[in-house]
Image 1 (cartoon, helix red, strand yellow):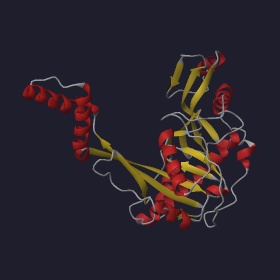
Image 2 (tube, helix red, strand yellow):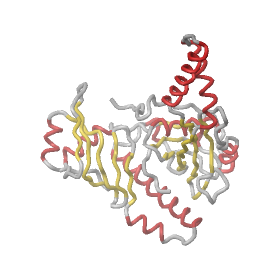
Image 3 (cartoon, rainbow, N blue to C red):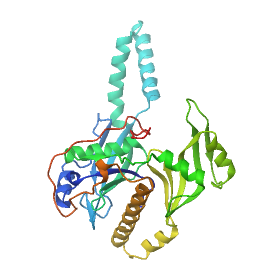
Image 4 (tube, rainbow, N blue to C red):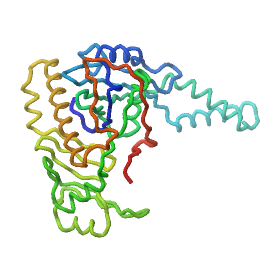
Length: 334
């Protein structure tokens, strides 16, 4: 249940819907296993095994989960079968198999093998924090996070959700923190960071289990390198790696939170609810504090949402830009 990575999006009142309406919309696109000739399938599932609904609602947070199933059919396997078939034809009919015929054989063999292929499944879990106006996605991969957003847009068009735009660029702020040898209020420097030279094909310095206040770090900054990743600890509760794309990776909820959640109940249902409630509250406070440390949001995103999980909002809005790569995100900072 504890998130291990975090990509987050800014919502507005048009993104938020009453839980019953959200559950009904997601229920129209349930997960179904891959058909015989399908390469993949995806759909909404209950966030936990003991739940029936695709949306789990606690306080002002709505938890949901997108499941995807992909067929695993390596190109090398297809190529081997094609080669065997080509060899069989050439020996039996004493002729050369042409390029077009090979392509036709490849399609035929792929269709024959696909129903028997292994499948690989994964889930992307997220929740809508209706009070704070954030969507939190348990993924540090841009393509997976955006796939979930796109699926929500299909269910509840247009579902406006945008990457956060802060007044200070994360790499600028992180570089300033290391140069000063101190993190902003509520945070403390951990022991990992990454610095990059801004020039093309510039050097990359990765520091692990190192005192980030050391003079050696400042010397790298003095030569023009900028911080692209930095390890932080928030309120002695959560350890994470902050990236220049404003993602949180390698999240660890420290013992004080783990113990608090474990004492909340003895059965599976109450423990799940307590863990989600505690995690969503702590992550919400962490993200708000992080945004404040980066100078706050730009004016266009600064206003909080006007709806909550218990009220409906049916007005139309505009969609956000889709990132271009698996690990790249379109960000407003240079």
